[in-house]
Image (cartoon, rainbow, N blue to C red):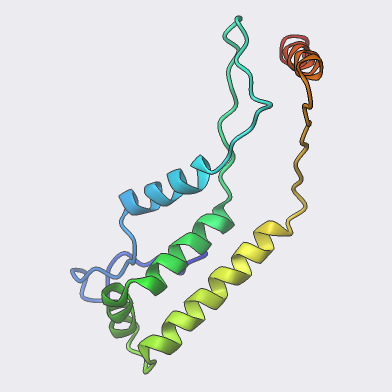
Length: 138
């Protein structure tokens, strides 16, 4: 929905109208999800389930728009598909601007991160065991 890729076929029912294959969308989700990392995630000896990494759909859409803007052949197909009179440069700029707006929206969404700094072995041990307690004694 965020990249306006909702129509599967054109009016003739045969010609492809979508921009991204399902496998490509899944790949973007994997790319965005793999950026997540946390030292807070600890799989204790009890084999508690480690939470899956969060996937920002807004950030995923931004990556897709940037990829579309960077691929001249695919961009030419989109311009031809939409039957609009845009130059490649203008279309790429518009897609990049929208992607930037999505990234800014995601960056300013109110999410936050907690970072626990460890300066020596004693503070590392303290932080490690507190994390174990957080995971075990929920």
